[in-house]
Image (cartoon, rainbow, N blue to C red; front, side, top):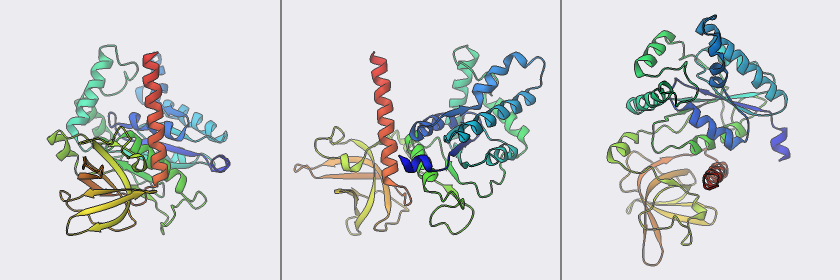
Amino acid sequence: MADEQSAPPVVVAMKGHPGSGKSTAARAIAAALRCPLLDKDDVRDCTMALEAVAASGVLNELSYAVLWRVAERQVQLGLSVVIDSPLSRRVHLDALTRIPGALVVIVECHPSDKEEWRRRLEKRGAAVSNGGGGGGWHKPKTWEELERLVEGYQGCTDYEIGDVPRIVVDTTDPTIDAEAIAAKSVLVSRSIDYRRGISPGNTGLTCVVYFLLSKSWGQMASAGLKPGVPVILRELEPSSEMFKQGASLRVTGILQSYDVDSATAVIQDGSVSLKVDTQNLRDISFRTNSAYQFIGELLIHADNEAILQARIGRNVNGLDLNLYQQALLIGRQREAKLRNSRRA
């Protein structure tokens, strides 16, 4: 705990267009880091009464100014913060990086499935139009409105971020959940050399992290396959509720061995190991002592020996398993509290 308190505060800044999944990811990251969440929409929603006397652009920039001031105050108190905003212009990022004593990490949301992105955006827009969506009256409600907004940016959203660490996320990939995004954010925020602004093992001054991008989302969505319940490998034993025939799981571990003839990998986490059938995987190379994540169905033999029939696999070397598992546990605790509150 003392080490965490002495570490410089981290500002996790979301980036992306409306409806791209920023808010869902931001909430998960804030829960994982146990820090305040500052949402630009919360400020902008309160300016409705000023619309008649001030231009929308002025009120938008005022909302950003309030956001930066509140963020700076939290950092002065030694707190990390998550900021949920489009971060659409370089001047906004510059304002963040000028906050004294804070490390800025960008989480950029890039939905690759435009139809899913459109569905989410218009579902939210319909809720706002019908009076059941809370705030957000100032945001695009249809795909056409979003296209006009993006066109008005004239490409200014694709600016160079310099040496600011960045995580790029495909928020429409069904193999990726908010907890996985949170885990990577925790990893990046805690593993960076704060004095030099570079991550361990990175020889350059630019630390741009591309993570959680998958080419397999379309195959899964079209086939109607479940993305797999994330489990901690060391908990996967016969007494576990997830240890059942045909369970769709996502497991992560260190590759101990790989048999080319049978296409069988063995991954390990602590003292627990699991065999993984990789016959259905393509375009993946295996290196011992590297971290891998697999999604597939559990096949259990009569002697309780289990093997995962993998349909998706990827190298996630650089992922800190302890931090990833910590994020999963936090997610479980949050879900349990939510279930208990609903029962109460």
